[in-house]
Image (cartoon, rainbow, N blue to C red; front, side, top):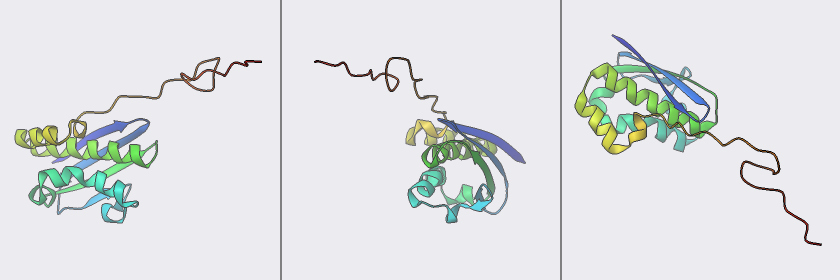
Amino acid sequence: MVTNTSGKKKTAVARATVRDGVGRVRINAVPIELIEPEIVRLKMMEPFRVCGDEVRDDVDVDVAVEGGGTSGQADATRTAIARGLVEHTGDAELRDAFMEFDRSLLVNDVRQPEPKKWGGPGARARYQKSYR
């Protein structure tokens, strides 16, 4: 059985494929153990820490992630992996465990940067007035 899911954060989009296997996890065809920096790797591994090794050893996960920066890609990847595991196993208890741990494991973060407007250097900041 093959399950396809996706996750988003800012402009990063991750597409995960979960299939029966031996516990291989690859991000953009690179084993997850080789992902640097370490904080990003730990963020991507969170779904496996919640569900435990018995679920991880039964599936292979391939993730293609693009767009955004390293942090956005890490959050998108963890959402895609968690959704894939829940859908692949069909386990309601696993879904509840993910929701209790962190809701963003299963729900995309839809926040986007506010667009810049005229009259200032950014979205809300205005150019300074002269007081002479």
